[in-house]
Length: 446
Image (cartoon, rainbow, N blue to C red; front, side):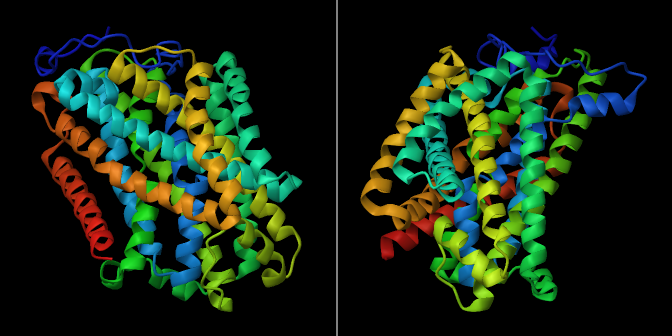
């Protein structure tokens, strides 16, 4: 157990139990103190695993719908979501390094069961929603590239558990390398597609500035919340606070402060990279579809089939399919780890990774298979967007506890978040909650 500050220890209802992800806990060395570059490189990795949430298949659906319907207008939502995520993910690293707890463990130790159990349920709902998006996205990727029927593709996605098991046996650094390699493939695919689409760069820059229409237009708000839910994802908060602890940083306060600095740099750089990819999806949709009068694109399959005639090159839809499949595989790994962290942290139930994966994947496959069989591509597109809105609605239940914990001197000791940072975080939490209330109000009033 970490040597914690006495003030930090007294702020929790219970002592910290078994370490998060105990099989890989502190297994990644951080280099000698004299080598700053090596230490920075040693901490690089968790941020990119978190960044995967910015470009999962559900994000594609909302960004494609937003870009084709409203052009570049929702780029400001992507930027705002990214800034929110940078703040919140830095708090995740702070919580983990200061207290030795991931967010799930912190909720269990800080709240009574009648509070922590519902929080666990909300976290599981968010992970299931994420998994549904991955199932559908991966199945569509297989269909676009190999012609595999969607129904069969949904079932094939259950086999990805073996990929995860193989990587975990090699070591956690191999898991991170797998993620980063696929992110590189995705970046290249979108880079080429953006060049082919030749967007109006003046309009792109204008799109990063906010407009009141986003709040006043219910349809735009719905897609904006979908983008928010696809970017600042609840399971990423649990994930980051767990995988940061795979690093073998020291136990003293100065060593923890140094670890926090490197972990924050890692997540900030990775999330800035993710913004480029996330914005690229929306820019591609705006340039390829909205600019040609196609404002109703919500299906990934339809977007794929239209890219070739609109952009004039057959390679465009192939790159689209490759990037989508890479996104699905990446999201699979991170959602598995998040599910493990949530279940072990809240309930102290340890399951073998493959058992946990099959359970969550089975829960996701059922609704995905039903929608795919009965409603086809159009139904899966709507389900993808719905999963992202569900994630947005669940977000407050993870954000508020995170901000509360990191603002508490009793719980965090000398690594308590500065007041200015806690203030910004509370504003972010309130904005998210208010937007969700607005969304629910629009649903009720029709």
